[in-house]
Length: 370
Image 1 (cartoon, one colour):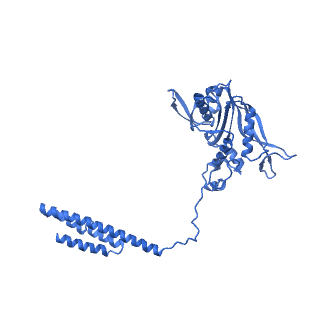
Image 2: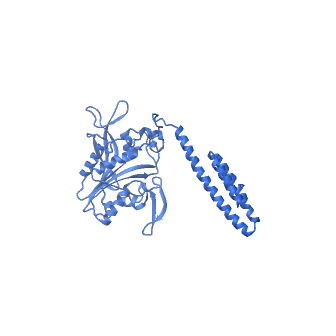
Image 3: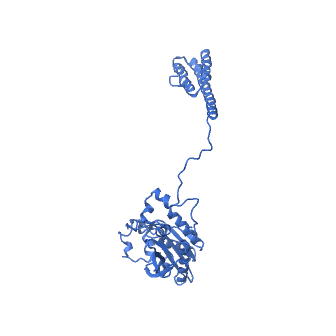
């Protein structure tokens, strides 16, 4: 026991004499390591008789714990001492400018969607959502697309393996070709729990098997739907005219409606906005000056919701009617913000985003883009 007490005194002196963390670690290894002095003494217990082994073993365990505690205490003291020296020697020049940080940008698609949400919210519309993977009924049948319609062909639509419907039947699955399927889901749900009016807009990705200079396999679309009693084409024209004039911030923007056909509306109309062509080939939205040709650009399709679509959703077309319209978000973003190529929206080029994107703090008004 006297040897253990002498060892404790010796080791305590060595620990206190360690003036830095490296020296203290050397003491720790020499005492408590695999070949350390206390470890070596523990290995001798096997040669002792039981009574001596018990007494000596307890004493060595106590010594080991005490030495470990002394090392930990000395380590804390040395770390504090090192920090005090560092604080006394280091200085910070607060006059130096901060390190530059890269700023993120809001994508033009996100900015355009926010602007449209703000405009339609002021008209009383709410935002509806739906799945990207749809079934044949919501995407085609309910929207009055007859069998054999070109949109149902494999070369026009991304079809997925069949899945079982809620009724246990095989249901054809596909990537939705338009956000009109969201309108079907919205009308069906409201018809189950109540009755119109319905005033919704929806935004989302849509997919078509098409790729060239003016088309991409995936793009964003916006759809607007208003169902109520006594809704007329005049309401559609007023809503659309207010929307495009507010969005492009042109109070006198010419708007033209041309008869057109879509399976899910009757009557249907293409909507054009007026522009003039400058001498350098660029275009400018607005009314043509006197003596200059007024040109027109198609931006979206619209119409009164077909009675068959209302029936498919459980709404009585004898009591309710309404209008719907939709447009490609990339198309109007390109037109408003002067983006020349559709494909650049999906290139994931941060240089492009830095040029055409918007600051998250200082960006255009959500309603007008100004």
